[in-house]
Amino acid sequence: MGQQVNQMEVRHVLVKDVRDVMVANRRMTRSMTIEVYSRCNEMFQVTETIGRRLGIPPRSYGVDFRNRQCDCKRFQTLRYPYAHVVVACSKVSLNVEQFIDKVYTLERKLCVWENEFPVLPDLSTWEVPPTTFELVPDKGLRRNPKGCL
Image 1 (cartoon, rainbow, N blue to C red):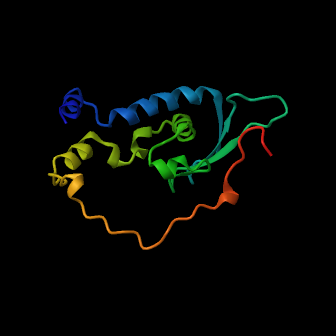
Image 2 (cartoon, rainbow, N blue to C red):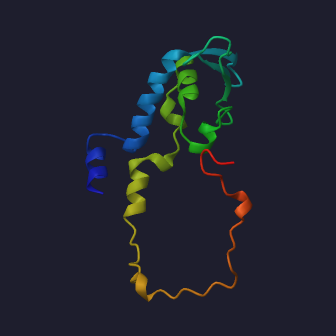
Image 3 (cartoon, helix red, strand yellow):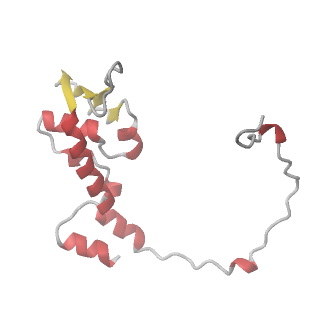
């Protein structure tokens, strides 16, 4: 907990892992292009040019700020902006941090860890009920060792 307090003293707001991911996301945006579909509806099309191989078309993703969604699903799943959202924010001069969920703030992390957690009893004293069924492996699902048919 002391580490989080130190980070807050130097005016960090977000947990270190998210700060690191955001730096990596900013680096990835260098190899992306963006088209504004609708500025008023806050929708964009981001095209990745990372590791493009001949004959394989680049991947494109729709970014929707209003609904906090991206076609890659990372934005809505992780609740912080992935590179597609970061590049869209830079295109229209938006602060990307407004799209990072408050659960990733140091303040929230400290609130979680200031609670008391009960000490678990010794594992050897736990009562484990006997199983009421027998687990039988399906041998038909086993993989053959390499080289055997």
